[in-house]
Image 1 (cartoon, one colour):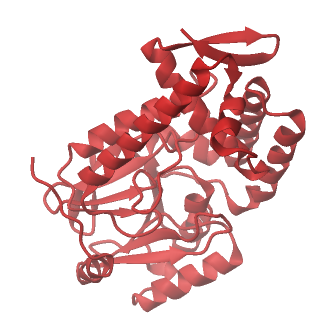
Image 2 (cartoon, helix red, strand yellow):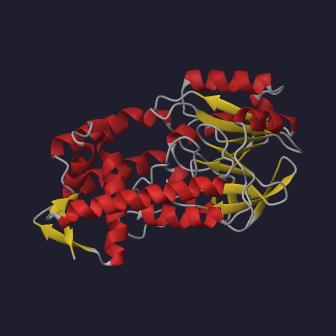
Image 3 (cartoon, one colour):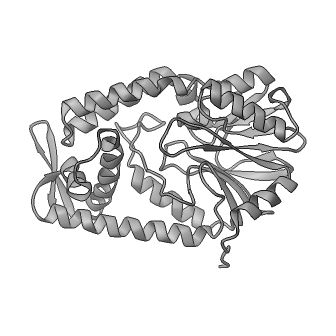
Length: 337
């Protein structure tokens, strides 16, 4: 199988502009920095993701679209790559102004349409998970409050064009396959054109940082939570088999050499999992206890992120039969099998 070599990011973006693909890095309030939205010219003007719901983000989005020679009102279709607020916050605003259609994975329609109710349910699930896995009630309550303050950066999205995995959609003259790649979120979607090797990947694979496989509520409502790292690993392996020349990602530079990047990410996961197993072997310990053993005094704002990572690795170890779960009252701990 051929390799797709790494290429200069600026050269990739410059070449993309000649093909009518414009990267629009929109500001966000989050540590990850700007979110990449993409304006794609063709028989219809398409916007892939729209940034968070803020006046500054809208102003910059409008200015960047103008630099590309268009206006928000020219947009015919807005596409959501996944459910996170830094990607969907302005979609409904743009769609309403432009009279545009809105497309997203069909399985995510209810989650997007009922943004507020689902955000509440997500916070409640997270608090319950944190308390059972060793995070104090004070930290859990604080994180729920922080999450509520960010709620305004998101908004409901009324999908008018449901997209089924395994079908295709025309974007910029390309017949792009729709691939569901859950892991970072339950609704992660890749749009891929086999003829050109071009893909739009949202946060599925980022060039400069690992995508966090965040534990979330399943889209189908089956079970309390996702097994996010197991899902993400499976998704990465599927993406590795694709003949991707360049993946335009949700943050950072375009991804080229995707197989080498995926291999390095999977190897890093293996190393982290073995470290976690070594900690569990030393005696029964909670997931948050493992997080503290690895990262020390975990910042409050990072508590759920680190807990998601640890539980993700423990899910794999449980599946492999190397550890077992022990319930002690309301606390869950893990020990070597």
